[in-house]
Length: 604
Image (tube, rainbow, N blue to C red; front, side, top):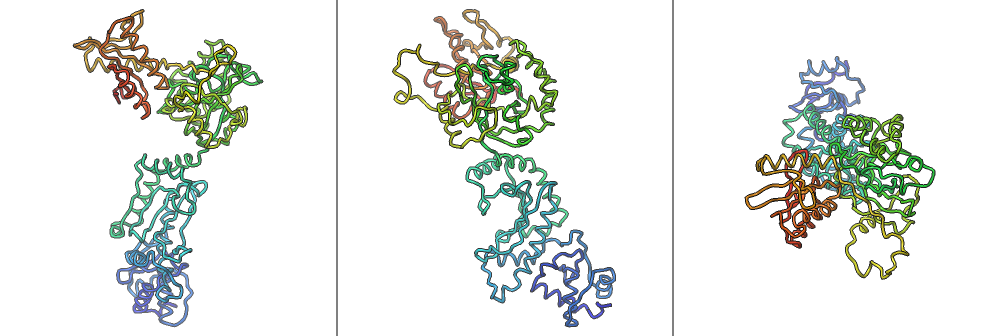
């Protein structure tokens, strides 16, 4: 047997050489390791090194039971087996890495001669670790260089990554950090590398990390004695599975594009169909049938788990191309009667549904009776409601192809904003069109433009010769939500104050009815419930009614008036409510009542 030239001294001397010189890249992988003085060494490289010490000649051989048996039984060294071909990170190799990290490397310096061979095992093990947490469909980007090439300095960490799609935004990585002496794993994105994301995407990524309370597990080199491959891989795999939904969402979010899309004309705020008036006069579905696919886009009565589902014709035309993607979409509409276009809303994070999700949502619509309500909306306008059945015969995605957060409904401007420059819209066709970020910002600014005497208005008195200044978007209150909120809020107050002193539908002057009235020791409190998508509209409508209930024609019936809504006020609206209270100096309160939790969330 070739190995008979070896004795235990040769093996021990070979181990000392490996301690000093490391392991050549091609010899790092080894399923069998030999234990020498409580340290592990790859069997084949150890034996080759020992054989050359014993004979002065190189050894070519294949690992087999006979050779391993000689070293184990005749030379009395313990063997350990690692299925993956790498023993676990060792204290010695990590301490060496820490001792040279961030130092300059000089090829001509003899002391630097074996830096690479002593770092190759760490690099290989990091790659192996990353491979073990791979997700189906992901790819591996290994980190095989131990030098920062442009400065020839020892890298502070090795961080192989696994990613899906293109390697240009977010990924999972494992990390062996010699500078801060830890190993770790995390969901991350490109911040400071040559692949760094644009500033606005970095800001988005940082905000999302804060939102999800992003974790970065780190294990110090001193703690690694309590770990082995089995524990480390199990914990890092569990982390990947926990954060995989966030990774997938971020891929969509960071890939998000800004678009313009036309939607059908509607004078009911896209809560329900409004009929033929203003519809396209060109040959089209809406011209032939009197309604379009987007008529229910902002119907806040139909919300599922915080999301509003709807349809956009521009998505429908190329749905398979857009499936699963995320868009910011500037919606505009066109009134065929006046031949004018208007900005409707900037919808954020509009996600295109996969067919199976569309089917699931349509089933929910049918079970809740919402689908029949949509058909009834058409029937009440003498429109052909059977067209809905025709649509879904070819799949639920014909009726429901997008979703967005229902909270966005409160951000939809209560008025349509005229398109003053028609060149801003590339085409009047129902297609998804690119939009410059500057245009979206301009639309937002137009919506938020404040009072101006100098830069707006007209001295022209003859209104009869002028066309209408705007198209008012008639907002529809959500009737179902109003009824549910009124019932639950009444029950809430009765449980808190007593059933006999809280009533609904008490009469006011002119046979008007107050939603909820509570009797106190000193008077009465009037509550008006409003469920418009826009809280500003609820405030505008609700306060007027409350003042009339309380003061008309010349009385003071309530000691306090309260507006109740299901909508969470934005910071802007909170400021407005406080300013309103201070300005009109009335005992007025706003209550945000959560329908699901059946409790008051906020009181201003």
